[in-house]
Length: 317
Image 1 (cartoon, rainbow, N blue to C red):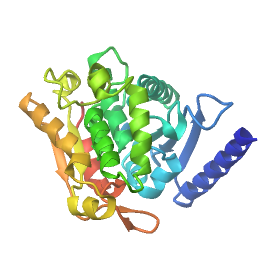
Image 2: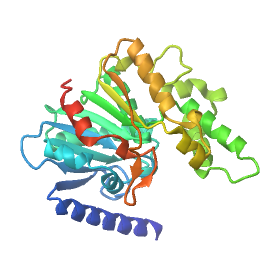
Image 3: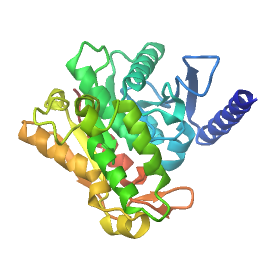
């Protein structure tokens, strides 16, 4: 019964989503790699209104987000369509709970990109990849693997909106929060993430540090800088809104728990390795979540769609 309920709920969401896009006159298509299960291994394509297609963007949702949620939070796919860019919003192998940087997620992402490239005849078009939160982590990880291997689909530019990149830092920060919460209710997201990170990495950083270095898109403690060396020659832009006082007041968190720590360190190391196209974009008071415009610096809204699209189109690969 749970599977039937989930499938019915998913179909209703898809129908509502399509109606929403049609109200904007936007052409969309939902594609299922596994036609028997619409909860994973699928993608939503938002197609440009006019030909020719000048490029395509793979836009990866944050943890727990559907394509519908992405479209609620950002107008980036709609603005891309106006500029001739086709957007692909994937749902990976573990559905909305996919971890993004692990092997199964990356294989699923690769399969979706290859399927979309064939279906929409995109092989000769510019390819961009980006995402929000752990979706941004997945985008950076895909680029690292694609650029260091024999991938058919290699991005011309990458962006990530406030992504966690160093999962050793993420794990230690979450553990610190649990320790400081002794005697009070701990942050349930951190409780979940401690267990999930241990599962993905095969243990704690003390027990499995090599796995943290191999799987994380960036590792502060990896003095060999293995993960990021394939990114030396590609434009990459990271967005963060480092409102530390908001985090202290609203989440009992500080800089050690903020993803900007990873992003600033990675951009700094890339630039020192010779990548003058690596950028860290810091914003102020742009982080708000829809539909009620609630203040949150970890939000899609910190990335200005028009400015981001101009940057993408300026990078031809």
